Length: 353
Image (cartoon, rainbow, N blue to C red; front, side, top):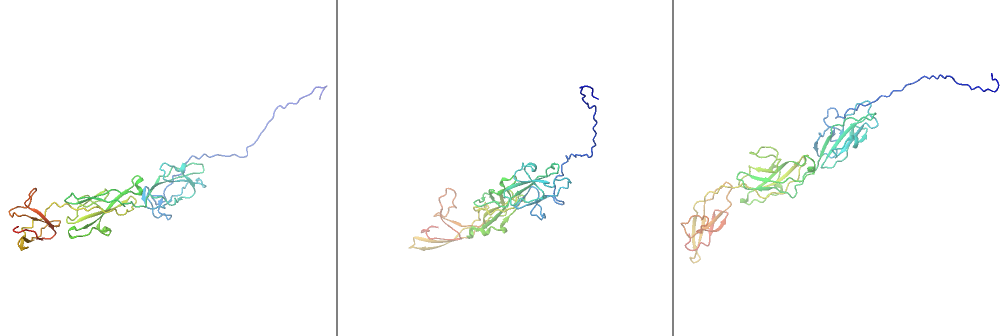
């Protein structure tokens, strides 16, 4: 009831509000990294010669194959990121990482296309889950590619003829595609030889004489029998009666063979043994030209020598008591050199022995 003109203002003394949660949500925090990428079961490498994955290319191996293929075991983590479960880096940068430099992919294989000879490549793989966790990096897989043999054109070995028991050949290493790779270059050498008998007029060997039948792939005894890895070879079985020539072939770390080098100069075993004496020559004399000249025909026994006799020097003297000339001796004069054991002197002069 209102009395007079007094106004009444209502006041709210208390309000009770109640509510009920009908549904609740939960959040799971995932900090576990996926398992590291590993090789296929029964394999020791992720590299292969082709997509049949039958023939492996070992880790850190040299290969002539420019089109390798890579495959690894699928990661078994249940929460792997199905849209991009792997990041893969493949290239020549040893410092690159898959997480930063790699490309995302779904497949558990990688085909790099055609590689460039003379390069070292690195493959690095990581797995990724739905929470964005990355696995530890797979072990770095390295492949060294070289499908080109060294070039020996314009290079020839040298020979030493100062030894009485061998011919020594030496050479320089040729340039190779793999020279820029640590541990690259030439792995070993083959030594090819050919010979001729100068005394019988054999020709200088031709290209066809340097064949696999005349090849050394290892050092010769008494040196240690092993692959020829140094740039020198001692030819102990060289025949002292022959002259030798050499060519070299290089085999690089990937197994590529070079062309044959140019041919060496002539080499031979030093002969330190003089020929045997011929004995006293027989002389058949005949007078002609009004008695002013005597034609003397000399014959003697053939000398023997371990490397053969290439010729005889004919000395003449008017003093029959003289000995063969020594240094500074002027009693005998060299008048000719012949290749046989007979000589006709048409200028002996009357009365000369």
